[in-house]
Length: 219
Image (cartoon, rainbow, N blue to C red; front, side, top):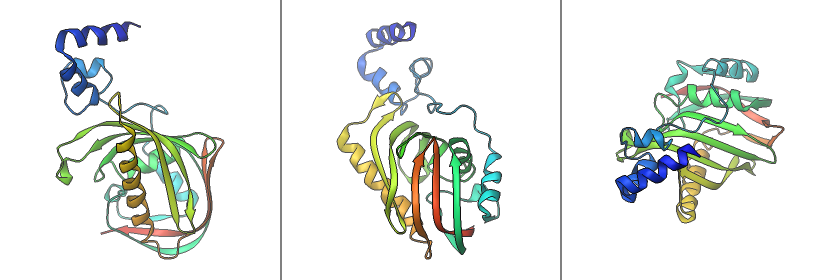
């Protein structure tokens, strides 16, 4: 209640335009951005153990050439040694793996994934497009679902997106959904012998069964 009162006062004192810009996280205004909770990604699962990803790699018998920080969703990577994989990952394990392989080079940093049930998932991250030529950086939150869309493809459905604490209109969510699906499946297309027999979220865990590369290297 106190936080809502503070927000109302800020709207009255500073004007709607400035406060909305601060609420989006795109423009950092001291005190205001912090009070609005728009200066950092939403904490979905608590502290993430950045070393837990090593256990994930060991569980899947997967080897990364070089440091994990060289890998990211948009990095140029090659994959080898395809073999059967049957693995279950928790929210903490998946978040640790995504942070270890994206915090340095990827546009999404400090990624947290919260796996729910019935293929539903939530994600929070700090979205930084500065190095890609776009003048935008700020926290984002998204909720939706993930599912198998083909023998070697994954589909992502996005129902809600927030930039800072502001909800993004549906027409822009659809554009983002198309972009994410393109990005993910472009990376999967490099896995020539990938085979997805089963992929689903249940009991707060991600389950995968199929043929997967057991070694990867980043160029």
